[in-house]
Amino acid sequence: MEALDLLEKRIDALTNVLGIDSNNEENRFTENLTDSIVSANTLITSATSGREKVGEMMKRTKELETLLDPDYLNDQQSIKMKEAYINTVANDLASNFEMLQKIKSFETTLGAEYFSNIPDVSPKVRDMNEALSTSQQQNELIEESLTLSMQRYSEIQSNLRDSLQQLNSRLDKFEDKVESIKKKAISE
Image (cartoon, rainbow, N blue to C red):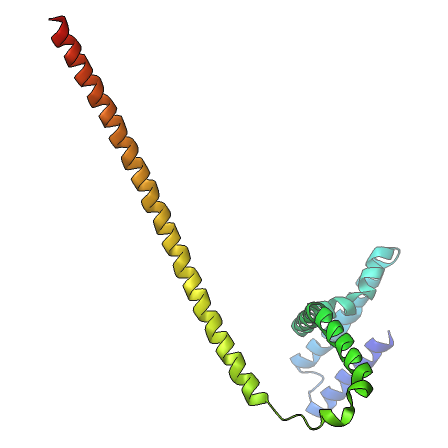
């Protein structure tokens, strides 16, 4: 009820600032609005009293508003994407960390001063990676063309086998006709 009292005082203060006449139609509307708010509050409290589930639902409206906020969904999706990325990279990171620990353990044996004298080979490594990627693409193209060629060879082989079978069946029919003609010729 205190909140409604504060609202009523605020409405009255705004009315005084705006200089609305008490006999004016708008002022009567403001009074009706205040009465309507009080009446609605009374109806809601009487409707929800004795109903724990409705009370629990009303307590969770702030959580519901948070879940319905479009930014909340985007935040949750970005968190899930980051989680999925971490899960996919976790094994690689663990193996890299183990390798780093092994290298650090051998550092004293190998002599740490020699590591600083290793020349920078980044451009060469980059060139080698580019050459490797182009050769990999070429290998994929060759593999694809070989697959297509083998498919075509299989089709030709299948067509040839079918043609030979048809030819063989025609020859069998022809031989049968020749033998039947010979039998007729012998019997006459």
